[in-house]
Image (cartoon, rainbow, N blue to C red; front, side):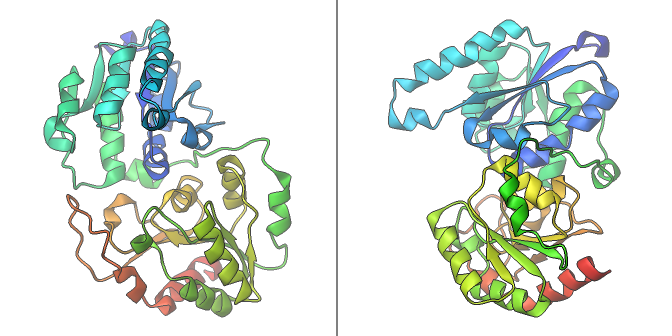
Length: 338
């Protein structure tokens, strides 16, 4: 397809939060090469607020495939919902997810679909839906994988230098103004992200306490589940420098992080928000690979000593518990004090 023929595209990236953020970085470069292109994005409803207010996205379309688990009849509602958007006449649909469910959604939207080839994804059958197939090893850097599957079908390249020098791309509006009551005007504001999808990915709450007590700045713990709230409460109760955040939506969380001086957190979506906002961060890795992210002058990583198999992550790898918090404190001081 010639460049001048591409006027409207759909990106299908349903989940999860970190993967969506790592794909969004491509948007600013699409707009550079295609200034007048219309970009729509299909996403699971739970993560839609991550995408909202991005000036490079024209429409965010929400699906709720999780409803199908509760009722098999819901599949017909979701198919009907997606199929009506085929009337948008997309010149290209890019399945940046590489799963069977995302491939099916892409097929409902258009017959002209780009995605990963069968050697680049776990659910190899998905590649049979694509008319243009992108090859990049499954264990390559996650951000590099995401930007390649977006840019190659559009006939341009996004380099590592482009990614490192990106513009901040997460935006917010109409946020809950109560979040600003947790910020300090006198101290550095440090966000703690204490939860993630597996317990083995979570840095010990006791060590977060030690970090707060050592830095003696204004530390704010964010949370999204009862388990995370319990950890946040523990950290607040064991440090004079910690505030437990009220529960907030993803839009308000973007706003809070954008006003912070540093974020320290596990390998999970809210931590990756800091990277998308160009806010200093330290991402703590245990059973997941550090090449999920880019390390920059302001976005640092620290990894436990365990060896990670990209193709079979070990949920019973609790080596994150062994990371010395003094190393994190040292990195943090370098980022907030220069």
